[in-house]
Image (cartoon, rainbow, N blue to C red; front, side, top):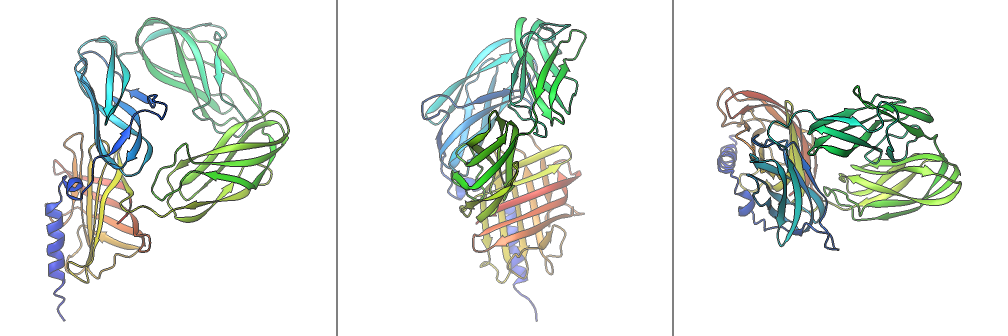
Length: 489
């Protein structure tokens, strides 16, 4: 018996492929996002400037401004600054959920002159000032400086954080050192490694004279006691860090208090945490953590005296599994479990990511449709994604038999009248880079495989992986690796 549905299904696929456009966000009715760059107290949320800004040197992807946004209404956004000294910062994209998030604004242009420029970054009715320092022409090279106290002990080093045996160092483990700058420029400081840890710091000195640098710790201490570190160079100095032994304590998981909202696909923030009762038996450093379902809860510190107390484990990550998630809490004498309830993903939430060589791309779901009515019993899935850089991510898969089930694979070179087939396309929002693979690609068609790893029809969530080959904008075949996607329809 002839399967006449194959032909209309193929026509639907080709129609979708040829009609995919960047206007999808407007056509699907996404409105404008609403939010603010300030806290409830009216104070500007954190901003970070990255990269070296040098007069007369064109800016690249390494030049950016990260801004923190409190999203009040999801939707499309444009966040930008004014133009000063020949440069500006801008980003477009879509917020999928309410809450606090960080957006990277790319820098454009070429700085005209050295100096400090106070840019006004705006989003909606809110605005904040961000200072950007531009070095003189030719000053983008290495700085010349000496450490105060060299060649002996570093002068008044400021040690931040707790250092405990077996506890990995984090961003709170810092050393602040005083320096004297004779030639402005870029600095890159790395100490020697002692007791399993070291300290590093990079940045720019924009003025000569007295200054300070902050080095961040790396590694995990292996033994208690005082460790001495030396800064690099002939004009170096030394400083010490005291590593304490591990504390003895028990965890009372039945006392756990869980705060915050937990939803599949929504990143956790400062409102998500677990308060735990602790009984300290012996003073020392502690590292309490637990991970499951894409979520991690952690607290690091030092118990100075025995007795009962409460610690707060801050959450990070993005929940991946709805329902009751059992979080195994470790770090004490008697580990235990805490249950965190995760809500189903909201319709339209999701993410995507892949790597091409040394380049990594990722973003969020813009729209996901599952069509089983246009050419039954065949089913077509269409995934549209974007990100703050303006990148466009798209794929569609056609299941000849219908359904799109878990553990099924779809290839760009499949026989469309007999096998599951796929089409993939990526367009960079920063340059002319594109990657494409599918039935309408120039022969020979690159082989890219998309695998559906899970399809929950109750929560309407589908996720999977992809990898293989695709043609770039110059018709060169490239390898795409580590591809992942998840979304709700």
